[in-house]
Amino acid sequence: MAKKHGHYCKVCEEYKSNESFSGKGHSAHICKKCAVLSPAERSREMTLARLMNLPYRLSAEQKAWLKGLQKDKCPEIAEAAQMVYAEHFPYAERNERKQQLHISEMTFVVQDELWDEYGDSFDAQIMFILDRKTRLISCTQAGASNTIELTAKEMRKLLNRIVNAYEIFCWEEDFSQEMPDVLGEEEDLADIEVSEDEGQPSWSVSVSYSNGEKQQMKGFDIPIRVNELALDLLQYFENDEDADDDEPYI
Image (cartoon, rainbow, N blue to C red; front, side):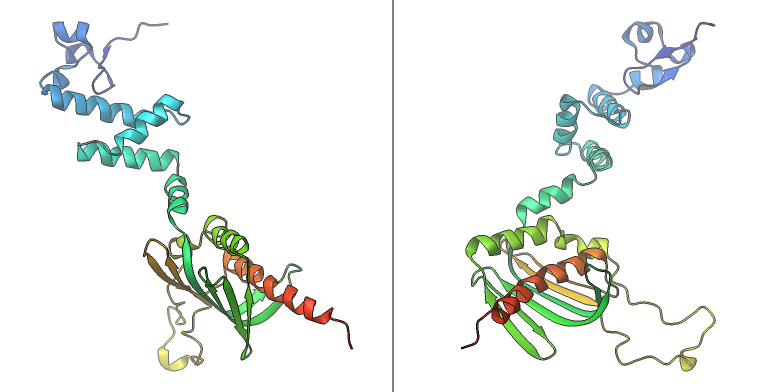
């Protein structure tokens, strides 16, 4: 095999020609371009080069080093570290948010078709209201309202599930909020009959968290997580109705 000509620079982590190094640069493994940098600039370039050349699978030491650099005093290094960390651990920020968010109150409205566990669709015009303090869940549909009270443990588990499993705080990011375009590329507004409910969202959510943060979100279709949360909440009231049906006649 032919010998590879050139030299490796430990600052920019590039393999360059011999002409790119001075006499001292050869022994120090620093190319002429990097040699003119100040010590602070050289340190920054070495860190940035190492960041960009991290392997896909990181050791515990590499992960800890990368995580710490996200708060580096140098904005360029901190920004690069955040970008690389997000690429390696895309759900890290989301999982960290889960630890910070605890629902205090939530209103969840569905005005579209849902699908049950058997794949059958049914029209849903439902509003759920959840309150951690009172431990109450209310469900309003077809003009009738029903309210049930959970234990403190049951309410805590439900609200934690809504954050951790359904990731409701990410619905704004994950699901489209834009109104569907009812016009085709070559269609005119006068030729389109728009129904009264055209602008009505399929679902909407208003959430208040214990840290004071609030979210208001809506969408114009029914993603799986929205459908499953609605069915999850409906089960509380189906069980309540079953209990009423089981009462003996006197």
